[in-house]
Length: 169
Image (cartoon, rainbow, N blue to C red):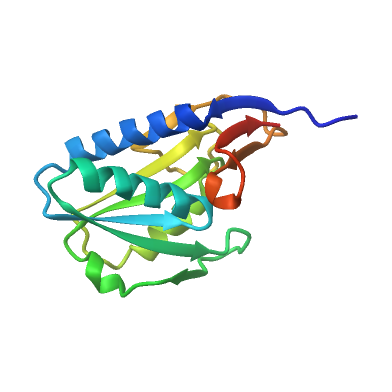
Protein backbone atom coordinates (compact mmCIF):
# COMPACT_ATOMS: atom_id res chain seq x y z
CA UNK A 1 0.00 0.00 0.00
CA UNK A 2 1.30 3.41 -0.97
CA UNK A 3 1.97 5.98 1.77
CA UNK A 4 -0.39 8.92 1.47
CA UNK A 5 0.82 12.41 2.22
CA UNK A 6 -1.66 15.13 3.04
CA UNK A 7 -0.35 18.68 2.67
CA UNK A 8 -1.06 20.61 5.88
CA UNK A 9 0.98 23.78 5.27
CA UNK A 10 2.66 25.02 2.10
CA UNK A 11 5.68 27.32 1.90
CA UNK A 12 3.67 30.54 2.04
CA UNK A 13 1.58 29.34 4.98
CA UNK A 14 4.69 28.30 6.90
CA UNK A 15 6.16 31.78 6.42
CA UNK A 16 2.88 33.36 7.56
CA UNK A 17 2.98 31.23 10.74
CA UNK A 18 6.60 32.23 11.39
CA UNK A 19 5.79 35.92 10.85
CA UNK A 20 2.80 35.73 13.22
CA UNK A 21 4.84 33.96 15.89
CA UNK A 22 7.59 36.58 15.55
CA UNK A 23 5.06 39.35 16.20
CA UNK A 24 3.74 37.47 19.23
CA UNK A 25 7.29 37.16 20.57
CA UNK A 26 7.81 40.89 19.97
CA UNK A 27 4.63 41.74 21.91
CA UNK A 28 5.62 39.46 24.80
CA UNK A 29 9.19 40.82 24.99
CA UNK A 30 8.83 44.44 23.89
CA UNK A 31 10.70 45.85 26.92
CA UNK A 32 13.65 43.44 26.68
CA UNK A 33 17.08 44.56 25.52
CA UNK A 34 18.01 41.07 24.31
CA UNK A 35 16.32 37.71 23.91
CA UNK A 36 17.84 34.29 23.36
CA UNK A 37 16.34 32.06 20.66
CA UNK A 38 17.35 28.44 21.30
CA UNK A 39 16.61 26.11 18.41
CA UNK A 40 16.44 22.36 18.97
CA UNK A 41 18.35 20.65 16.18
CA UNK A 42 17.76 19.92 13.43
CA UNK A 43 14.48 21.49 12.25
CA UNK A 44 13.90 23.53 15.41
CA UNK A 45 17.25 25.16 14.63
CA UNK A 46 16.05 26.03 11.12
CA UNK A 47 12.82 27.54 12.49
CA UNK A 48 14.74 29.46 15.16
CA UNK A 49 16.99 30.98 12.48
CA UNK A 50 13.95 32.05 10.48
CA UNK A 51 12.31 33.57 13.56
CA UNK A 52 15.51 35.47 14.33
CA UNK A 53 15.59 36.84 10.78
CA UNK A 54 12.04 38.21 11.10
CA UNK A 55 12.68 39.55 14.61
CA UNK A 56 15.85 41.31 13.44
CA UNK A 57 13.67 43.24 10.95
CA UNK A 58 10.81 44.17 13.30
CA UNK A 59 12.09 44.19 16.90
CA UNK A 60 13.99 46.90 18.76
CA UNK A 61 15.80 44.30 20.89
CA UNK A 62 18.80 42.16 20.00
CA UNK A 63 18.15 38.48 19.38
CA UNK A 64 20.85 35.86 19.83
CA UNK A 65 20.54 32.46 18.16
CA UNK A 66 21.73 29.32 19.97
CA UNK A 67 21.29 25.64 19.20
CA UNK A 68 20.59 22.63 21.37
CA UNK A 69 21.43 19.13 20.19
CA UNK A 70 19.38 16.73 22.32
CA UNK A 71 19.39 12.96 22.33
CA UNK A 72 15.62 12.57 21.97
CA UNK A 73 15.77 8.80 22.40
CA UNK A 74 17.70 8.79 25.68
CA UNK A 75 15.95 8.06 28.96
CA UNK A 76 17.83 10.96 30.58
CA UNK A 77 18.86 14.47 29.60
CA UNK A 78 21.77 14.28 27.19
CA UNK A 79 22.34 17.62 25.45
CA UNK A 80 25.11 19.34 23.56
CA UNK A 81 25.04 23.12 23.45
CA UNK A 82 27.07 25.47 21.27
CA UNK A 83 27.25 28.29 23.82
CA UNK A 84 28.18 29.22 27.38
CA UNK A 85 24.93 28.79 29.31
CA UNK A 86 25.81 31.87 31.41
CA UNK A 87 24.90 34.18 28.52
CA UNK A 88 21.27 33.30 29.21
CA UNK A 89 21.34 34.73 32.75
CA UNK A 90 18.51 37.21 33.37
CA UNK A 91 17.27 37.02 29.78
CA UNK A 92 14.11 35.83 28.09
CA UNK A 93 14.74 32.50 26.35
CA UNK A 94 12.58 31.24 23.49
CA UNK A 95 12.89 27.45 23.03
CA UNK A 96 12.01 26.43 19.44
CA UNK A 97 11.15 23.02 17.96
CA UNK A 98 9.27 21.94 14.84
CA UNK A 99 6.66 19.53 16.25
CA UNK A 100 5.32 18.98 19.76
CA UNK A 101 4.18 15.40 20.08
CA UNK A 102 4.71 13.81 23.50
CA UNK A 103 6.52 16.80 24.99
CA UNK A 104 9.68 14.83 25.83
CA UNK A 105 11.96 16.92 23.62
CA UNK A 106 10.70 20.20 25.08
CA UNK A 107 11.01 18.78 28.60
CA UNK A 108 14.66 17.94 27.86
CA UNK A 109 15.08 21.43 26.40
CA UNK A 110 13.78 22.90 29.66
CA UNK A 111 16.32 20.78 31.53
CA UNK A 112 19.21 22.60 29.86
CA UNK A 113 18.06 25.84 31.51
CA UNK A 114 17.03 24.51 34.96
CA UNK A 115 20.04 25.93 36.80
CA UNK A 116 20.03 29.26 34.95
CA UNK A 117 18.32 32.33 36.45
CA UNK A 118 16.14 33.29 33.47
CA UNK A 119 13.69 36.18 33.23
CA UNK A 120 11.31 33.85 31.42
CA UNK A 121 11.28 30.75 29.26
CA UNK A 122 8.81 30.51 26.38
CA UNK A 123 8.22 27.75 23.84
CA UNK A 124 7.56 27.82 20.11
CA UNK A 125 6.48 24.94 17.87
CA UNK A 126 5.29 25.02 14.30
CA UNK A 127 2.95 22.05 14.86
CA UNK A 128 1.30 21.09 18.18
CA UNK A 129 -0.10 17.55 17.85
CA UNK A 130 -1.93 17.45 21.19
CA UNK A 131 -0.48 14.07 22.27
CA UNK A 132 1.39 15.19 25.37
CA UNK A 133 2.74 12.62 27.80
CA UNK A 134 4.73 15.28 29.64
CA UNK A 135 3.24 18.34 31.35
CA UNK A 136 4.45 20.88 28.80
CA UNK A 137 2.58 23.45 26.80
CA UNK A 138 3.50 25.85 24.06
CA UNK A 139 3.39 29.58 24.31
CA UNK A 140 3.37 30.10 20.54
CA UNK A 141 2.38 27.57 17.89
CA UNK A 142 1.78 27.77 14.18
CA UNK A 143 -1.07 25.27 14.15
CA UNK A 144 -2.59 22.73 16.54
CA UNK A 145 -3.61 19.41 15.01
CA UNK A 146 -5.58 16.61 16.56
CA UNK A 147 -4.13 13.51 14.95
CA UNK A 148 -4.11 9.83 15.75
CA UNK A 149 -0.96 8.44 17.34
CA UNK A 150 -0.05 6.31 14.30
CA UNK A 151 0.09 9.35 12.02
CA UNK A 152 3.34 11.18 11.44
CA UNK A 153 4.00 14.87 10.80
CA UNK A 154 6.79 15.55 8.31
CA UNK A 155 8.16 19.10 8.38
CA UNK A 156 10.19 19.77 5.25
CA UNK A 157 12.20 22.98 5.14
CA UNK A 158 14.24 24.40 2.26
CA UNK A 159 17.40 24.05 4.39
CA UNK A 160 17.07 20.31 3.71
CA UNK A 161 17.04 20.82 -0.06
CA UNK A 162 13.30 20.60 -0.67
CA UNK A 163 10.51 23.16 -0.83
CA UNK A 164 8.95 24.10 2.52
CA UNK A 165 5.90 22.02 3.41
CA UNK A 166 4.27 20.20 6.32
CA UNK A 167 2.70 16.84 5.59
CA UNK A 168 0.49 14.50 7.58
CA UNK A 169 1.40 10.88 6.81
